[in-house]
Image 1 (tube, protein in one colour):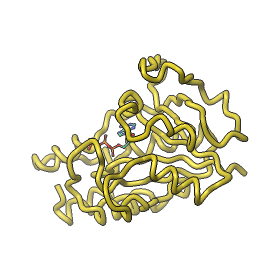
Image 2 (cartoon, protein in one colour; image 1 turned 30 degrees about the horizontal axis):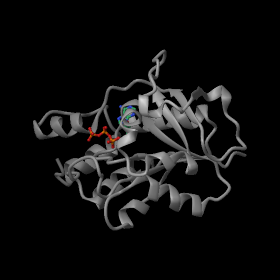
Image 3 (cartoon, helix red, strand yellow; image 1 turned 30 degrees about the vertical axis):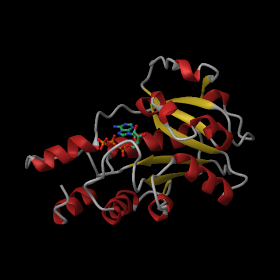
Length: 207
Ligand code: ATP
């Protein structure tokens, strides 16, 4: 039984099928024991979420109640200051010293990686999985020229950190922004996110 852990961070304002289906695709292709969904308290690269931290957590709980692959991890919500991924990785590495860690990123997040706090050290603590479109060519940004990107066939389950993988995932053109806009315009985002999450967001009048 694998002990590999996937890490999917985000604002989750709200969580939707784009997050969940692609997370599951990665978990299955990389044979991960679990994916930890880690909501950011104060995302460094964007404005404050519309939903409170408690509401974002509750929506995550509702979204994955029926699925054992996903684990909700609220460690960033308990930390002061900005939510830096490097701090989260340090804390996960302490808790799981013998597990391969896989930080899961969309292509856009991967391309912006060099703006992240202490990005050069990320691979000392984790592997990275870049979620790609089938057939998409990942062009390595110049600043990452020393990094090599390989596919899931090259997994070495004994290495805990240091590799960059690509993983083709289902293409669902869904964003939390789109869902917030639909709700604000009194339109329906049904079928873009789990029904229980939508009911909760409506009941709490979050968006
Ligand atoms: P927003 O529209 O508010 O910016 P978002 O929908 O992009 O939000 P985030 O919570 O910021 O969601 O995303 C967290 C992570 O999930 C990021 O790594 C992002 O690339 C990934 N992600 C978001 N939407 C999708 C999607 N439709 N398919 C695959 N990955 C996604």
